[in-house]
Image 1: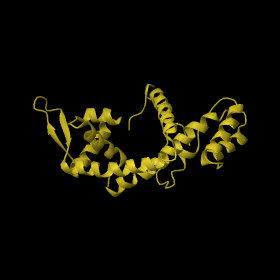
Image 2: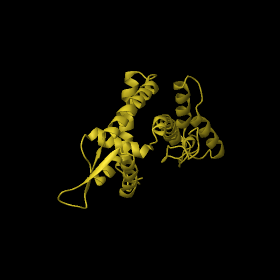
Image 3: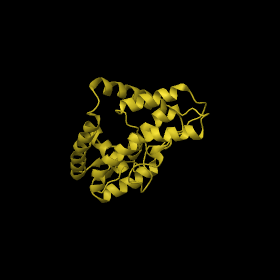
Image 4: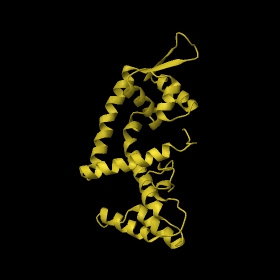
Length: 212
């Protein structure tokens, strides 16, 4: 498990691998044990995968502060399991996650976008967007038209088939997400959303983030 990649390794059907470990530096603190105890209590006394990994690393490197693993490791593990489940309907539709993100960007904005705008909306590189648009165009899910004033610029929009595909998949994904969060009360969901928003803001504010 690493703190910068929550996706399961290719071919890893369980989502384990990168999503079950975490990096940390520094010296061990008593807060580590407190965090582990709180996590077990929150899980009804069960020890999750990350807790086992943290315990093993403490045995190997008792001088290191493994507290970040308690949080980052679980974020990565949750992200891997969530994406594994939510990608299932995409695979049935013959779509990759990045392709669906492009279709989703066109659907939620409600208007045509240029490839550069799509790259910004999906946090992708221009080359990656060009490749994905080619595949989606061949499947008649999007269509492109040239700009009347600048031939170098293209405008992309959803076809009826592309819109119907997005509208068919999204409710299934939202239903799954609701079921995952059903065990948290309203206050817990609100607090989690605020904390994740703060963490995401810090990460997105860092320069040099890679685009895929």
